[in-house]
Amino acid sequence: MAVTTQLAPPLASSWNIDTRPSPCIRDFPPEASIVLVGSRGSGKRTLGFIGATHLGRRLITEDHYFQQATGTTRGIFLRQYGTQEFYRKNVEVLKQMLDNHRTGCIIECGMGSLSYPAQKALAEYSKTHPVIYVTRGSHRIKFLLRLGDEEAARLEIADLAHRTCSNLEYYNIYDPSGDGAETPPENGLGNVSSRLKYAKEDFSSFLDLLTGQGVIRSGFESPFSIAALPPECRSFTYALSLRLSTIPDLDLVELEAGADAVQLKIDTWSPDLQKTIGKHVATIRRNLGVPVIFQVRVLLSFKLVEPLALFGPSGK
Image 1 (spheres, one colour):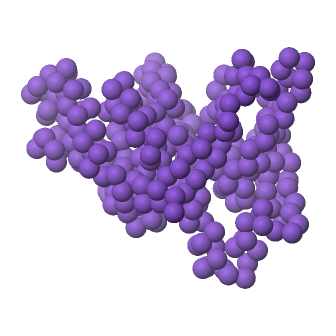
Image 2: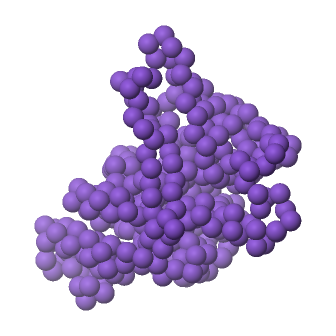
């Protein structure tokens, strides 16, 4: 049985209430490999280790696979063969890595995913596999990679291209339980990820939603708990309504009040709206752990439109 996720179509200025397209249906085989893409410093490799451990899958990293396929590291290959051959080989190895690990794996893509040919291959792969764009606050990435302002800005702009070749998005929110652990993993991924208590819970919940394992796990772990029954199957439910603009000033734990879901109203607009929404959905997911009802109010042709889309603990 395949796992299906349904998402509302993105809004655009030319979108018309009478001609809007059908929702995008993504149908993934349950054992389809999961790909992680994103900027350096976004936490892909640590999340990949967490995901592989949680789902019992094999973790494939692009750096290690490149060395396995070529017999040398990226740095040595670049020095020996030059930039042009290095980029060509990067794309070749990435395509080979994806094709040879279509099931049962968590695949972490490195900087090779920034090239256009690689993104084209990933976009094709996303038709049958989950490709998750991992994002994080730009200030956090700048701090972790010790970048200057100009280099950080270039990296952030280049990173946005990953939205064109992915079909899901995950905001890797800061985890205070791992202070001192979110540095380059010289001491090993297991040592780093084991200290990230909240990150493990967040990403494991996200993967359970993606693979359809969430309800099954809840039923096994707490068969008599209300959490074992999805909100849409309950006789009575209560939704907590929050505006996007107010979330930074709220104590979400105090507001929970036994809510079965959160209705997130998008009432503010900014150039980086997608990342802002991702951050606040991650905040809700961590503090409340309930599904999110996503509401957008848009005035088009003097008609008020309120499209609704129901998400689990996180989604794109």
